[in-house]
Image (cartoon, rainbow, N blue to C red; front, side):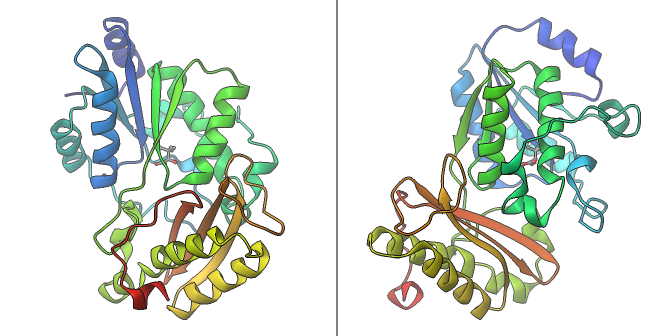
Length: 294
Ligand code: PAF
């Protein structure tokens, strides 16, 4: 695998290869979830195509007081993981390469959808995500981009950005990878203390329970949302939101819940923010014990 820190060097490589070029954008601190995105990218690219990953901890998507400065930076280990899973190229620019003026004056604004759920708690976050992904797409020039389902709102917003701003790139969403106890893999899991790590799967168990409840067909969304919050809080987390919304528009469901909906949860565990989601039409794994499901 070749690593490029510089746009001109990357572009020389890009000019020398044909299609497809499958892109996996990341902020590094890579784990098995990222590995599965890269493996999927490898499959999509085939022998003739190329797999490009990027690592850039984007200052624009972190708010004041968030974890930008302590976000784990683990480049050598990340390079190993990417190589092992079939990436051809890593693009790992410095902040000055992405934002030569120190900040980006030109911003991509996601509109109202960027102000709900995660966006309500993290003002400006999705503007930062859209801006950096637009820049990365223009630098990398991929034919495909793979994103994880775990960041569901990010995926929906970026899908809208790519459609509305006419990026000629096919977007692929990959399923969330989970630890054996159901906790969604995330770079932020490494912030958790041993005690917090024990509590963290409550989000997943609550999602499984809630999806089964939602599928009954007679559950009211607002009521179920309340019960989700209670369950997550009872496990010692602090729910930030429990959203039951349409999976294309992310507009909150009123009344009965349908198979086209998704349940999004964000919760704080100590100082760590965890997010997870499940589509109502998703198959709920049978690994949970009856006690855990009740
Ligand atoms: O999901 C992430 O890791 C980031 O938000 C992304 C898409 C790489 C943009 O910085």
